[in-house]
Amino acid sequence: MVKEQKPKIYRTENKFDTYMTKDAFCKFISDELIAKDGLKENFQFQNYKVIFGLFMIVNVIYSHYHYIPYPQDYYILIACIIFYYVSTYIYQWFEKVKEGDIFILYDDKKTRKTFGFGASQELYQRFVVLRIYSMPHKALLVERKIDSAEYLDVKGYIVQPKMRSLINELLQEANKK
Image (cartoon, rainbow, N blue to C red):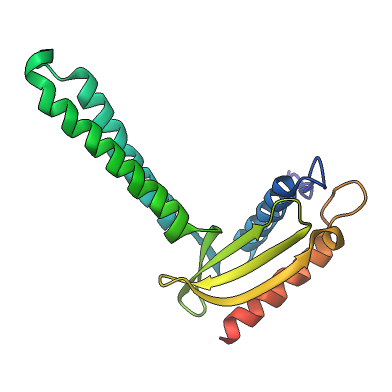
């Protein structure tokens, strides 16, 4: 017996909250891209962030549980603190510069290229800017500014057919370049 899957409902609790609307759009776009044939999610950015995080955790654990008594471990503690701040800086730089507004990386099996889908929204503005980048150099392929009110109904639900057609337009435009 096969269970029928209910269609996912994408809704923002408060359609006037810029962060919630952008998050709802990002979740919908991510799920749509993963569901498409020929597209596969790429976890490259998440893998780098996990590695940075593990280095920071190992550093903190070592600085706390090493077996040298306090007066002699002065230089070890200084080195651990410096390493922690440098690795935190690298992590934040990676998130801000390399990752930026990209919320999903995906590989297109047909073209054998990696693309990044990004979204940004100014505070207290209803316009969302959707972008598709060519990776790894983060070259901008497509940029479209949309009015979030056009893609949300009165109750804050995403108008899925309209949003799907927008995603398909953006993907076709990116594949042409």
